[in-house]
Amino acid sequence: MLGEFEYLLLTAATRLGEKAYGATIRQEIEDATGRPCSIGALYTTLDRLELKGLLRTQMGNATSQRGGRRKRMVRVTGKGAQAASDFYEAVKRVSRGVSWETSRATVRS
Amino acid sequence: MTQIRWWVVDVFSRLLEPAEREVVLGDFADSRETSGRALRGVLGLVARRQAALWAGWRPWLTAVGLIVPLGMLLSIVSRRTADGSAVYLWLYANNWDWALTTNPGFWSLLAETGVHLLVWYLTLACFSWTSGFVLGSASRSMNRINGVLMCLMLLFGALVGAPRYFAFCEDYLHRTFRVAALPDYNAAVFDLPFYRVLLPLIVQGVLVALPAVWGLRQGLEAVRFRLPLRISLWIAAVATLAAMVIQDQAFWLFLNSHVVRAYRQPGNWLGWGIRLLQSVVFWPVAYLVVREVGRRWQRRIA
Image 1: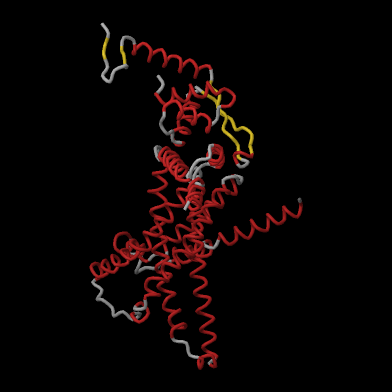
Image 2 (image 1 turned 180 degrees about the vertical axis):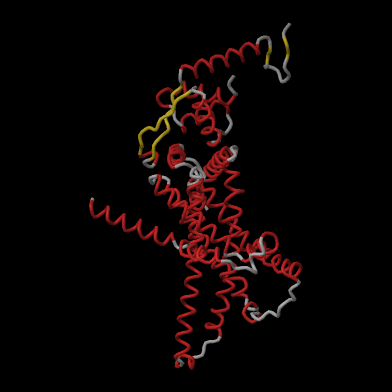
């Protein structure tokens, strides 16, 4: 089972597709959550997910915008997409019958 | 302030693997990160990477088995070298008299002392270089943090470790051999703050820390050598470290008190062996010369 941040990262990378690399994934997560995303958490999580076979990374081309430095391009694998989907389904299932519209949670009978 | 922060970011990013450093600095440029946020980011990543490395047993073994004992031993040898040379330096620098230069005996004694000091300093630098070499060969993935830890250990050794060790040795001598306290013949030298405080730190920095870091970098390169050459280098390194232990008087005091009373019987088994060790100690000089000649030769061929 994925962790919350792992799910966010896989989803952001999937949405970005060919443009998924460190800086864009980070921006995507920050825009979605409204919270800062540390580069330490990002790259250690990328390593962990790659080790689990949920994504693959490779060094991309250098650009002048990056001061001639290369990017670490990210691509979600089939196994990663399945893990993210399983996580999302689990969140949907556990949320069934729960409303977060008021400040206090209520359970519909 | 911003420029200083970026400089600090650059310095700390060197603790990352080169490829990761390139990616991270590129990301900062790409997203036009502020210097403060970049600094927090790089510090966080370095902390996470280092913490991950320390999760295994090897870094702990390297720290406990190599960095602490080598750092302490080097600090002791360094302090003894600094104190020993302080007496000679004081003799010449603080008591200089031009009239002495007309005396032929003065020049021969000066030359003899100069050679003596050079050999001491070279021996210390070789001990330090070898220690760094061993450390660099033993743990490649953590070479930067090991270098930092070694320097911290040397600083601790210079300020706390070595002075306490000598105080302990003196106390041990009095208790074990009931040796009466001798008058301090060198009080005039060590009353001066330069010889008491500054010179040991200079010697520790120039003849210990710098050669150790140099040796550490060379040790990293040496892992690419062929096995027979690596074995030869390791034999020379182990012999040098053995010589560093053996030359310490506490080693002989320990032998005398607890093992074979070797102190009173300087047996034949010691003589040639020690002389051989004394020459092996200078192997880094031969190694560096041969390497440099080899490099130049290869460049000429290319």
